[in-house]
Image (cartoon, rainbow, N blue to C red):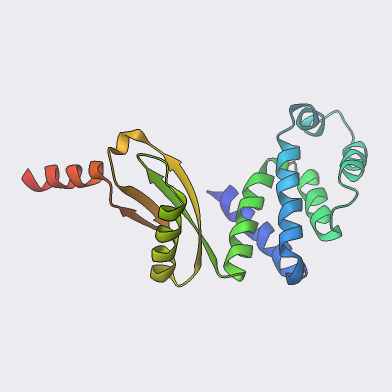
Length: 174
């Protein structure tokens, strides 16, 4: 839990310091940093306590020479604190802040079968009316739902699945 709060603090600091007209560029950089941390060879090198900080910083500086200085300062700070593992969480939180700034809400949608374009558009429009924001759907398929849809949006769970309705009926009959 402390890791999540730290990621929020770091992402908020970067968000506050960068030019709001370039939020998407900074997001691309944050995503790139997150992917860099997933490279096993680079991660092993950066996590090796025998490698001096200066060598690690030089490697990152070479790999990320075109990254915004504010973002690079965050990377160096995390490197000094041996917390580069937080980069995916920081990138995810930064995306949430940027989306909020742009009036966007991401909705995780789970269905029994893939949604067609018309269903995606209709669902996005309805969820947008509920939240008052532009909705970006992130959908996945779970055949175990039997039918219907489960939506997680704006911190809420909307369960309109057949499985959910059957579970509610079972609780009612007890």
